[in-house]
Length: 254
Image 1 (tube, one colour):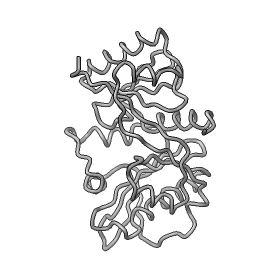
Image 2 (image 1 turned 180 degrees about the vertical axis):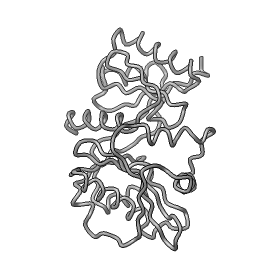
Image 3 (image 1 turned 45 degrees about the vertical axis):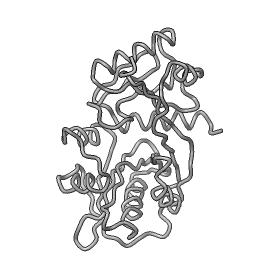
């Protein structure tokens, strides 16, 4: 079992780095809404207890997200509070959603065996960067302005990197600095450049940038069934720290 302190720390770091457009505090729960773009930014973060009974708190969550036409979701970990929350959600008909691994690595470990792929940095995502991200990730939102706003909203220091192969953007990624942590976000590789170290190179570049800004620890989030990505991160020295999962409520069942 992972130390509860590191889980709480990384959940708080992640929430501050991937900052939803709207956050409402309901006791110790953070109700996040971001026009439906990304599960993480449109879910409850229950790292402390709510302000009233669990039954009424869950009802409040459902009403909150229904009013915004967003699927009600909780981002759950083994330390979510109250501790009976997951069992109560199951009994109340909430379904099990996406499972995500939080992986961590020492900066120095990631920077072993550096690749020589050309890297370019920018302070904001250009149109070319976003196009490369959409192509590599296959995430295409109804409103194309929502995701760039989410990527840049946090006041934390950040950088957008691109790996360049044959004068084309082969892979992109976002690095966000929070204390001594450098977080890797939005890593995406063009289909034609996969298995050419493009994703490795952009990940190492972001971690190197973090090191230059006094980070000594790195973290990332990867879906547990994304075997190619997990294999790549393992080669870079990342190891599983803990897992979070989503509980979501199908309002159409009502």
